[in-house]
Length: 233
Ligand code: SAH
Image (cartoon, rainbow, N blue to C red):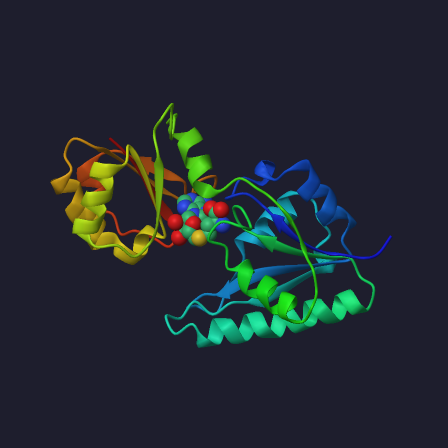
């Protein structure tokens, strides 16, 4: 059988939330590309690698690629371009390549940069779905995210208070991804939509997991990168 490049969704943090298909693909891969970030103290951190190690994947076949977190996305794009070339090369060498993505690989996942680069080079890739963070958050909080005729609206981070209040009034369920990008606007909206419940989550599935619906606590919280909200009306 011909070799493949497969994007494997890892789930949002809890290692057991990977699919059986994803796990099998990781085990069968010759090489696994996995994103990491270099923290301010120069320590390299990779939540994806932590998941792989918890799943007993052989670290010797893992290749970390550093994705700079700076606001200027030029550096990150250069990193995706470089790793796309390495992935393409490994594929041409006949290797079965896996590339990890946190949560689901098709839901606000930066893995699309790599997929687009490979597509441009005429390489077709496979994707294995996974549990997105907001679905995991809903289960943690025992929320039925959408029921019956309810519509779900997903906000990708950047939003103003008035836009958010407008969406809360229109939809019974609103999910805010990348909440740290608009923390102050979200906090303002809490006062303007007192009839809604704001479910706030950090680091779902990790040791540092945090969940509250207490509006004072949410307002006093510094939203980290891995935070999201589910707002139910
Ligand atoms: N592909 C991912 C989303 C990546 S976008 C998915 O399917 O969920 C990155 C955003 O996802 C973060 O800013 C945060 O809002 C959310 N996120 C991802 N993992 C999370 C986690 N474990 N806990 C809380 N939020 C998380």
